[in-house]
Length: 120
Image 1 (tube, rainbow, N blue to C red):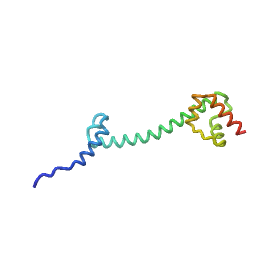
Image 2 (cartoon, rainbow, N blue to C red):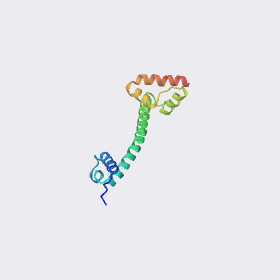
Image 3 (cartoon, rainbow, N blue to C red):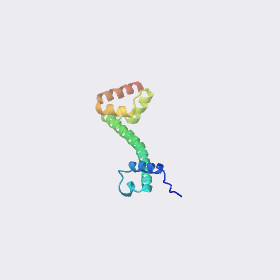
Image 4 (tube, helix red, strand yellow):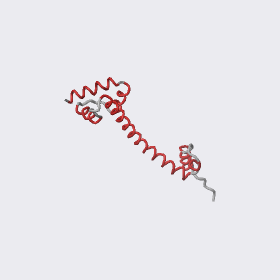
C-alpha cells in the first residue's frame, strides 16, 4: 500500500497555538502539551485580572472621593454623599465623580453642597 500523508489541519492548529505562546519561556513555548496548558492558564488569568482590575479601580475612585469630601469637614462622608446622589437622581458615576474631585475641587464641592441642600 502507498503511504498516506497526514493532513495539514492539526499542524495548522498547533502553529496557531505556538504563535500565541511564542513569548513564553522555556518549554512553555516549545512543547505542544505545555503550550496548550499555558494558553488555558494565561486566558484564565487574563479573565480573572480583568474582573480584578474593575474592582480595584472602583475602590480607587471611592478612596479619592472620600478623601476630597473629608478635607472639607469630617461630618460628611462618602456613603452619605452617594445616598444623597441616588436620592437626588443625579446621574454621576464614581469614575466621573473621582475625576471631578481631583481636577476641579470647587466644582465637586458645589455638587456636594447642592446635594446637601436638596437632602435637607
